[in-house]
Image (tube, rainbow, N blue to C red):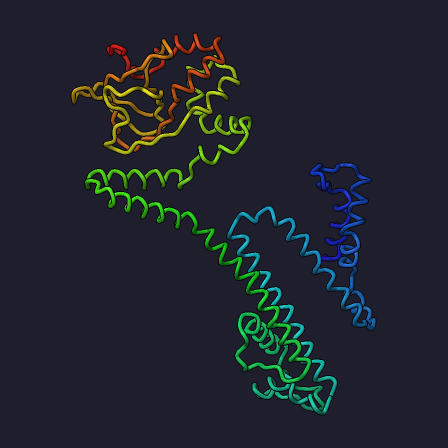
Length: 418
């Protein structure tokens, strides 16, 4: 089955597109074949050879043939290249690093076993009875006899001991209960310790960085919380104001996880940023107020829409404040107050603002707007709105006419402008 799968993989690779150095996807069959033949074809062909058939026909296999089987390991490099796209996922990278470390330990355990076996087979009178396999057999009361051809520990016990030795040597300097005695074993142990030092820097250094990255948001949250508390302490803010600040910070963090979308998007080109903000603000842009606006107008307008948040008991606006934006309630409920009298209750989908007429006019609010529950809002900044309406005068007249009908509550009504 493995042979058939390898053959199918080779055939598919002759028909699989690839990305050129210039970043273009190549679809031409001839170019695909040339690229595959000059890259992975030889390795895949050797890896696909049915070596097990040699054993089935009792063919004597030399060591070189065994060595060719290790070419299959090179295919792991291609797997790692394809997994590179998931490198931003800390859990996946951590799993890959630990798997790589375990695979290396397995390979070295196999080499360690082969070294011990060869030392036994050579029947050297100076080394045959001091090798690690011979010592292991004596320790577990399963010694070798009849000129080292019979007896000895089982394959399972030998592999476990070999894996234990390589892991202890890679992660430390070993514990001595499985030790190197012959020259070949000592040379291998030296190499293992050197590789272990390199693996410490490569694998465990990356593991530390990955774990720090996984908890970076948690660390940033506590850093900002500490800064906020230090600010409150230095400026001797009253307890009520302190509690409001902490509640607002904790609630907004739970909503956006500490990510400032405006700061994040500022480095992107306007074209891409417009598409992103169109998606983020699609709820407010789907209002009937914007049905007649062109797509270009909506894209420009979306750049001037900001997200806001209001905690229970907090005031969004106070009576007499200069109105800076038109607010759309995405979730939660609010009340409009004037002289302690509730004038209106606002909920999801409601629009708060004022009718527009003259651009340079300062609009003062005629009532308070207070949050009853946690409220998410989207606000169209008036300064940006006027800029967009100047660019699209054909829509500006329609907008001025429609907004006074679409407002759930007009904060300008009954107020004399300055």
